[in-house]
Image 1 (cartoon, one colour):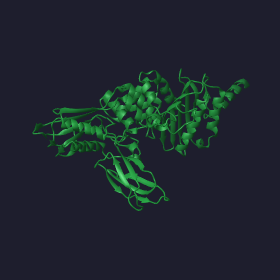
Image 2 (cartoon, one colour):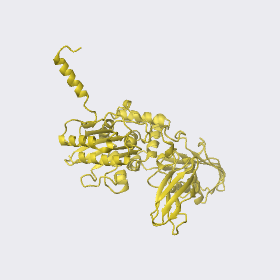
Image 3 (cartoon, one colour):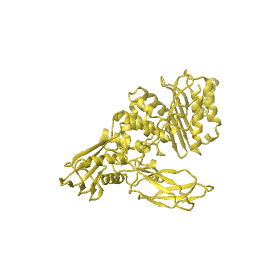
Image 4 (cartoon, helix red, strand yellow):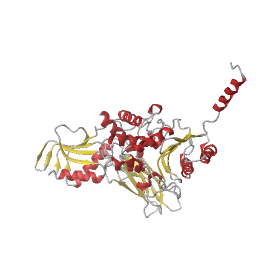
Length: 492
């Protein structure tokens, strides 16, 4: 029992202080701002209707010394969505290096007789997510240059560089047909220079007569994917409503709905089933275009020790690959880089080993992974949870690394319209005070929106920030809140 009014008063003051809502941001003095800045952020968080019932974690640091300028629930674990890629990119650059490339190798065994390969041809993948139809064409030409016009054996794909677990542990079943939920294989292919590995591009074009089926084009042009077209071209006054679904366990796309006769093309992407066979099929088609006939089957297998290397294709270096990875928020790249780190460091291309390496690298950068839950490399997991203060700590620490210029260059830039410059921020924050001054990674999941990166403020200082918004009723409205927060910071 307290024995004096003096002690009771002290106790009462402590108890009252503990009742101050945690939602009010704390402030550490820094040159970047004055008290008005804090009041504006506190007011926004308190009065924004879309944040009622939601959780906001906000961390703002001085980029020069790393000191916290503003902290609003910054130590609360929240789902980061694609802000998880900030961790994955940093770890990958640290482990693999900016010059790292992914090889794809072609082998042959058996013997040659009168331009006929009396054996098998092997395509061994080692994680390259950027292989396109033209690359298979170049490798097919290398085979032709060996004097081969016919392969009496099989065409075998070796994807053993990684394990055979195709989906990360928390991937929602509803995402398996989407390009951002594509299967992960060491042997895969991309449809365009966006490099959405393991997927195809689908374009639906209205035709000249109402009531007829619209045209459907698949990129790359391949027999691997079949299309069931149930859609109709309708009058210009009717609604555009097109759906594209891939049948489970198959490579059959069902296109349904309506497209008005005056509408521009509808473009979507769909993940394929079994990216290894997808890549093999594209290679076989490329061989046939070079006049090389494959008499055997397409199948998965291992390259034997006796096989001879006859072609070797290499991807762009990691310093370039991180641009489409981060600018366009490519989930497949994130998971491939996670497995690649596991393969390089621990000899096993799996999520388990890759995440182990990821955590070790983050710890070296001052991130406390013991307080976080990390389940994948992309952030598609609804179980992965991190703190805004840990993200801002990472963004401070990486500035001293030799690979930081490549890392910074990979971030989307607000309001810059070119796709590989503005990335996922190219349509946001176009005003004069923000355009080109915000370099940050976006993130979106159902009920989740996030944005973390660097801001060059009106006063000429650089500020690090992380905003994690969870339990939103509408994640799209989270983007508006993020832009408001960034505007307050930028105008200091």
